[in-house]
Image (cartoon, helix red, strand yellow):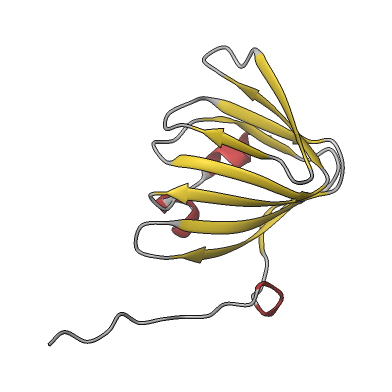
Length: 125
């Protein structure tokens, strides 16, 4: 009989924050097929335009984000506390924190570029 799957418990506040830019930090928990991250954005922080094959859900716990989405980034969507934005695979997007913001980003499959820190689109700022 196979061994039961390993079960892990994580506590956000016990995990170190990873500095992404001088205005963005994150904490990541990754399973086999899904990744969840707390993303901390100071007011005015920019997530540069990019796209990825990962499906993304962004759930704003505190603050407000403005997204520009689509091939020409012409569609503007504001996402505030208690709201979730679904970004299908390969949809170009960028974002700006309109307020100090904490969001939960969920990715399927996990973002390998976040795990191995090759998410160099942040360096375009």
